[in-house]
Image: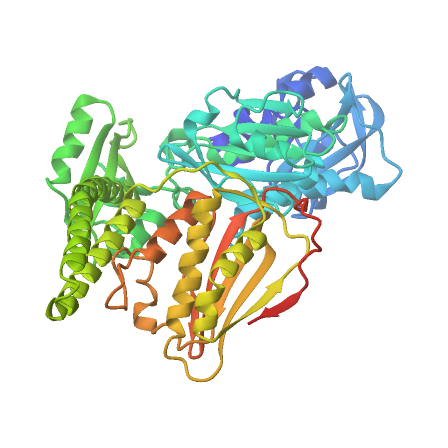
Amino acid sequence: MMDARYPWAAREVVEHIPWPTLALSPTGEIVRVNRTFLRWSGYDRAMVERRPVSEVFPDLRNADWTTSEPWTRPLSWTEDLTHQRTLTGLWVPWPGGGGWLLLPTTGAGEPRRPVSDASHATVPIDALAQLRAALWDDVDGLRWPRALNATVALVQGAWAALYLRQGETLHLVAHTSEAPALPGRVPRDALRNLDARGLWDVQQPAPTPIHRRARLTATTHVWHARLQQHPLVDEGVLWIGFQEGPQTGSHALLELVAELWLWRFRAPQHGAFTPGLLDHALEAVIVLDARGRIRGWNATAAHLFQYQPAEVQGMRVSDVLVGPKPLDDVLQQARTEEHPLTLDGWLLVRRDGERLPCRVRVVATETTARAPGGWALFIQDLSEQEHYRLQSKRLEQRALIGDLLLTFAHEVRNPLNNLAVGLQTLQYALRDEPQFHERLQRLWEDTQRLTRLMNDLLAFARPKKGEKRALALDELLRQVVRRMEPRLDKRRIQVEWYCQDDLPMVLGDRYALEQVFVNLVTNAMQALEKQEGERFIGLRCRTLVQDGQTFVEIAISDNGPGIPPEIRDKIFKPFFSTRPDGTGLGLAIAHNIVTDHQGHMPLPETFPGGTVFRVRLPAWQAVPPRGDGQPQTTLKEATS
């Protein structure tokens, strides 16, 4: 009963606090003391527990332990119940009254001496109070960010991050603003070599992706605490980064931080499934009584199945959750077999009639003398996994189709070559028969069109893998445009250059990237064929920083009619073309090449009077060396 009434006085929490600690009730009674206090004070547990704290600290008054505000100040201590001496006490209040009276130590078990600068003395207790409030009183829905900020302030770290488990993956749910660019997801297997708690420094091998990311920044030390699995909340890991290592005395604070965080994830005592605790679960959690009626329905279940707790309270679970077989049979099976049951791939129907693939774990709670046992259902939504499975299946089918296309193109190309040679022979043999000239020319053009289509099919289905070297994209683009100048001049198209100086180089396949630029410039030329008046193609080269990574961006624009909105989303799809003689593979091939270079080619920006295609490739080095002796590109050049 003691722990149930005063959760902050639970033995498993108080005993792990590295300082002498007294847990007080709202009336000022000493509910529990830890062994550190007993060793330091010399008292026996029976001498202090259940006594008023004022008998041990005579200058404490009622207002000192009924306040909800934390404080730190010198206290009089009755040593051996007779002699008095002064030490510094820290008060951490808890919801509903009561709290902790801590006596921080500096070593050798001695209480810390009073600090002359009051501001320094109040920092730990303020951070403790903020951490306590964040973990227990989620008043603004920002529990985890507030708790991480308080953690960093308490241990004087550089940053902190929290990962929680969902299935077999740890997800980054919150981090402080100073944290490096941490991975959003980490497989649980990546943490298998981590101890429950530990401190890593930059001189050691990086065992996880978090350590590898930290190594790329000013972080020199990373401390972690694994949050033990809770029946209602998946396990996770708390990470704290330091730029110069934890300060002297911070190790005790780190242990205290770990215990405070663990309290939020520790299994409830005596099977207490409280509504507030249920709402922190990442899975849908449904608590049933001995008759299979719903007594607990957390926020995740409400979101997943679209029923509010008040609507389902007291209803039979089999009337709410409709699956492939009645849940009543599953509940009895879990009770009979005396171990949790896991049902994978169950299709449960939610309120709107949609079927959700789920993983259902059925846990039978223990039967006690006071109350019969019930069940707890832990339901994980597998919709995303099913989506990825279907997508993987579609990709496999596309790969098979690609192999078929490759074989088809190879088989057709040889007969086409024979037809082309035969047509040339016929044209020469019938050169004096004008009545056959037009028909033979049409046949020749059709064979050339089919040859181009086969070549594009081969390039799309199995692109050539050339050697990637350092390239200056702006110079490569200039060479492409110089080769296309006769075609540009013939169509009266003016080219305008807007190039930034000192562009970084990229690592790429020269011939593949040439094909990208040829396709895009050709696409712009075709868009200007019916353009009245002046015709322009703009070429812009610049650096761009996205998510901390530097890219070189090439933008190719034209002042044509633009792309109709209804077809904009289709232009990168294979075989989609607006031209009667087009294969519909040019832009698809360009998009594939850019993706193969770890770059981006977003959908074009289009508007009445113009279209802009952008190619972004990762920068390879800061400034490209120019060995040709040519001056750097000016901001704006024009050629006709």
